Length: 265
Length: 248
Ligand SMILES: Nc1ncnc2c1ncn2[C@@H]1O[C@H](COP(=O)(O)OP(=O)(O)OP(=O)(O)O)[C@@H](O)[C@H]1O
Ligand SMILES: [Mg+2]
Image 1 (cartoon, protein in one colour):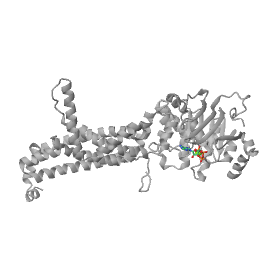
Image 2 (cartoon, chains in turn green, brown):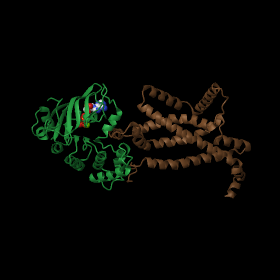
Image 3 (cartoon, helix red, strand yellow):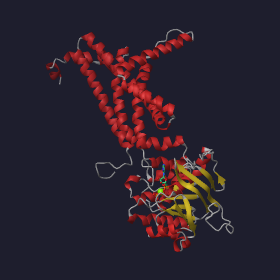
Image 4 (cartoon, chains in turn blue, brown):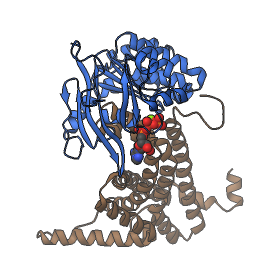
């Protein structure tokens, strides 16, 4: 597969704006090369599911996109703006990174809510302090968002008093509060008890339905098949296979993907 | 009550301790002690915060220098440090003053005390805060980063508030040590509570009375501090369910 031009959607016919483009991304930790040239494009409204075995580099790829990890080489273009990188892959312009990060809201496996702040404070934190939205506006919006993810009435509660599912939904509200142009989900349901997975998936499904752009690392194959319009299978730091979910799940080409799908089924 | 005083032979003590008598001197000494303890604790916190960040995120040279600072300060007895820092400090100031053509400078006792104890406190605070910062779950700092917070804002809005619950018990200890270390400043002739007490005691020969009174004052400081820190800790631990079980 030609990874350099692999696109999430049919390239020619698609006039939707590009949200995220990754070109030939490499990342090594010391001697361990974790990403060996990954390219990927997500257009506005795309839901790209990233699947693959443990250690295949899914999280690392996601984290390179907003520079939580420093890529070793490659190009990253967010909303048409290329992130300036030094020769060693480190961001050349910290201000640019910070600005771009506010457009890419990340939802973590472990939620990572700020435990010393209430849910409302968590949700308004970035709008008020980073985006300089007037506090009253941010609060009103945060209340709506918490309501929307089913946490109305929990505004003044601290995260530690909530279930994992509630915390993750609050984390999604925090992500929505920055009005992101794309959302990055890293296994948002993997830390949850099985009975709590559904409530989080429901929220994500709604976001997909309203046309949010997202990159979603997940082990929930059924869910990926249902919400994604493009699926990427990562194997040992390379994109082994990708395409529409019906193809990838219904008619896998490579043996590795076949094996992977039968192992998670 | 007065009967008890008389029985214990304390009628004279009460007289001696009256505010117009030596009691006023003791309270002035206490005020001086507290002033220095406050200043030193504050200075120690500032040094400690920079020290902790330096140790965690600084370059090799910074880390080595800080390691020397915390090791030396914590290895040498405080009394010796106070003598060294006090005389070295005043010597330097005088040299500078003479170099600039001025005369000898009268060292301000409070400022000197704050500087000397603050440097000592800073070494311990560095370690307390370093441990506390390390205890903050990395994910919370990562989340802040991923939402575009600049470094200083992360420190102010996330790291420092989140580490407080880990730091407060250690800082409370440091504060109590600060109040008690002020007594060591007596050796350089600073009029804090212990020196005032000794002067009152030797002038009146009522050693028992005055040292007991001083002990009582130190105890009160400790008790009040305990109450204040209990509240601070409760605030710092907001959001964390108590281990004793039950919610809120
Ligand atoms: N900070 C790091 N330092 C060194 N090695 C790392 C680091 N982060 C990840 N790795 C290694 O990189 C490889 C890919 O890790 P990554 O977390 O991207 O995998 P993943 O596909 O997300 O796996 P999982 O499904 O288990 O989350 C692993 O071998 C991992 O050990
Ligand atoms: Mg992962």
